View 1 (cartoon, chains in turn green, brown):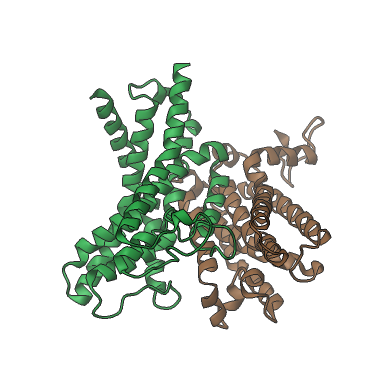
View 2 (cartoon, each protein chain N blue to C red):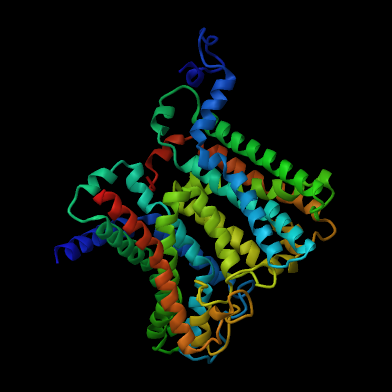
Length: 267
Length: 246
């Protein structure tokens, strides 16, 4: 119980520290604003929804629109969170505190995810509010929350896992470059061009969840390519499998670092 | 410390002071290996992707396009991110601001080193591709137009945003977001005559249409507002002491 409490304390600390970062709010607001402003002209073809479209479709298109570039901001925001302790020379001090390495890592991850997701959730709620007023449909807000949970949240968890851990090995500047390159390669680039995971269950852009919510394949969900086992028809169960896989894949690097740090502490 | 404090109006450096070579070596050290090696890492990553594509059965033209894309697109992104780090993370900033040498000079030296490393890597990479028969871009003499304008533009944007906002997060997201937007909305840029000169990757994404070289020069001209903004912001470098991302 003490371990859980300590982890929650780390989580609270990380959350409060991150949520006060003005740059996080400004960055998400600018990116979301730019995407919303550009969606009528140069945006992805599945946004915006036509007049009279159901709330589910309208809000999924918003989530889908945000998921194209917003996770870049997630990755940039979280890339230095673990390095920060080392850079500020507080790592040893934190190591002497009651929560073990696993607890600290879990707390940092949960707090970081919650704080980074808050501005994105706010952006979705603003979009839902706008659509509620524009279309006079009160179900926009619950559907906005559902679309956020299905499309953006798994992307955030996936990105957070790698953004926290990879810079420890690659350094933050290298991680940022490779992350943007990965985002383009692994989510948007067609498998016909290069071997890529685009359109697979492991595409964090949320193609399966968005396809399921929209009722039509979007962002190449299920497109033929490498690892056909990861490219089923975009159905409800495939969307659930995609969400679960993304969350599990996002936790893998954290587990690896947690185990490594725990072993180092015992040695 | 004469190499830091030395200014044009001051007496000549005393005997035993660091030479110019030593000063540049010191600045290279301050740049950090991760930042300095970013251009190399970018081309190595592209080469790895090309090998992967070739292993997957991609033809020679496709592999060549991947390599060209690396030079035109990935290298500018890598350099912009590295430039952001140079500007936004300097642990000895207070010390620099207390010395006669202007902080803008120190940053300028480091960015010049990064630019130099980028140019060397790009030219060598171009030469290797050309020698291996994998070059599918413009004439080799014009090859700097492939990577230099986009690198300078994206780098200038990143440095400007980093200085303006004092936020590494905003600067890196701006560079990454603009890069991704150019990749995603290539057809949107191609569809509008006014937007085409502002497009960063015309050779790999728009098949080097006629007049792309003029557009590259126009793109280079649009760097001027960023450069002016950077110069103005660096006139008050003490603003950088209160950056949010420690």
